[in-house]
Length: 477
Image 1 (cartoon, one colour):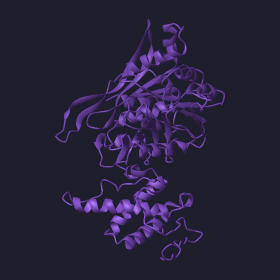
Image 2 (cartoon, rainbow, N blue to C red):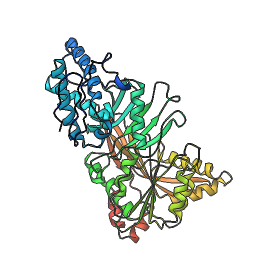
Image 3 (spheres, one colour):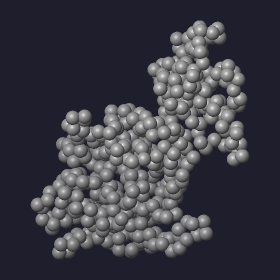
Image 4 (cartoon, rainbow, N blue to C red):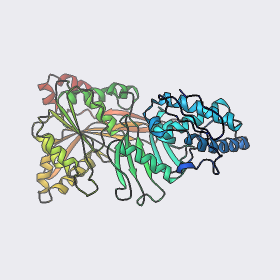
């Protein structure tokens, strides 16, 4: 708690040793409130409930806020404050703001003082204006385009928020706070960075001079609720029969590629599929920024590393895939295949690591095969086309195509098998597809998950695991 302080002019008093707040009464009031010691001002959350016609009151609050900031930061020991638990720090800041309000005879209600205290604490030990969006469970993505333009995704739809940063410098400070926590950096010499928050949320940051309107931050929030195939079935992301087939595919240790566009739910599907892995298996995950949520006890998590200031020490995904083969994995799960590591991933799938999974960007299962072929060509340019395609059909068993549709709902639009090679062409067959049928008045799309009623190519493998009858029942409508 705060120590008692004397209000005698020119004297100074400090808090008790356990307090993070150092109380100092300046001999003279600051000439420019709000700008002492190079501190910048934190604005109140812009989405605070208030009447549209109460502009004068709002201006009064903002003016009081600037004065409070200037006086408050004079009395805070930042190092000690950062070491305190958040709630303890918030309580102390609230008390100090109350003292300043009384001293300066400001007209601020208790609720307004609490809002100001939370904004200050968020700026000190959190991510500033983004904290309230991170706490909002309806928000799945946060996109900072510039200091005064922050979008979020709710229920699959993008919305412009009223949350604001002070200026470009404020955004950059928050970005640097994010990356330094995991030992990375973001500046003019290294303006692109993938990172993650403490809760596992994925972050991409791109800074000036590449970002012309100031530092840009994109956050894919970590799902607190575990997503399973059963939950996806209840949410109408997949049909009951599709869920059964995917569970059988995991039990049969099929190699699975999850394909889709940006934000379509590839990682969510990968997490749901990974929950079907037996707990006795050794699993190695490889990602650019770790975000997979595997629940098995025997999991080794690997993450790439950027180059240092001298341009040395970079570890790319292909290096990790190669190393994973020496770690005696039962399955390898690659967060996203986007380059030459595709060759090593397919070799892993072909050399006894059945049940491995990865994701990639593609608009349909056929395009996913073309993307794999192009990525392998990047790795081994002199390999004949037929050899590449032979490698693909020997490695990949199933392609799951996910899509975020225009009503904001993510659906599995295709479950397709890689069957073989006819001449130089990879042959595939759909087991399930989503057929669009119209639109409700509320904008929700109508459609049906349909089985193609073909016998799965992996039915013999399912028979080996004693699951052929269940498989045939699931694909027959």
